[in-house]
Picture (tube, helix red, strand yellow):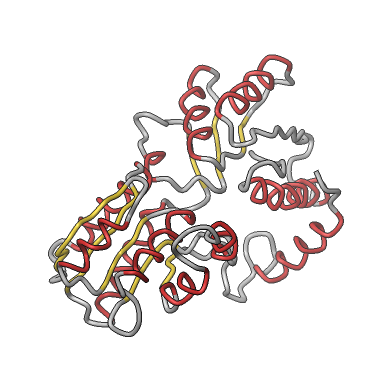
Length: 291
């Protein structure tokens, strides 16, 4: 998994590392595997395909004999390693790779994950649309496989639900033409699939087309980094779209994501409630040395 500061998703790896160490401590203290023990080795992939694959091969070559691969954050690195597992009869368990592509069991028979696929939010979007009686929508999708697969699945979820997809637009780098087409077709509910960088461009286009305010509703991924727009604003100073324009256009958008931790006050198989686990994790994270 990525661990270094050199890549944005290194935050995920550094955030998960204390959870892994906490799990190892609990397994050891509760003697769950006696007379066996677990040996945890971690490698920094830096979200780079070549470095990730080299780390994997080095782990296999120099040992000890590995029984399982835990991790996979960045889609391309995860998929490359997941395809290689069959040669060593290894299981891989990912905690963060949500791309729908990895659900293909013929291609990735040894890959499993503890998080839902990106497609898992689509039934929630359907319920949201039905709750507000929104029956006419449009889609705006960044031309990347991860996003197009979610869009295609959403199309299937909406089929037969008396909800019309009146326009389907996609873009590679400049979304403005697609945004203008959505406006031309009088689309008021826009279901977007794009990353944070493109989200800034989309909302800037929406500002210039006046596609914001009470007559429009944007529904986009909710897994962006906290305050993602602040980083975007710092890049907009030299562009025709000012930060205040971006903030005005994006106000009121709905972000859809799944909860990483249950809110129910129920003890799990570990004997702890999710809230008790979170307290232990926070304590552990505060004592972890920075990488």
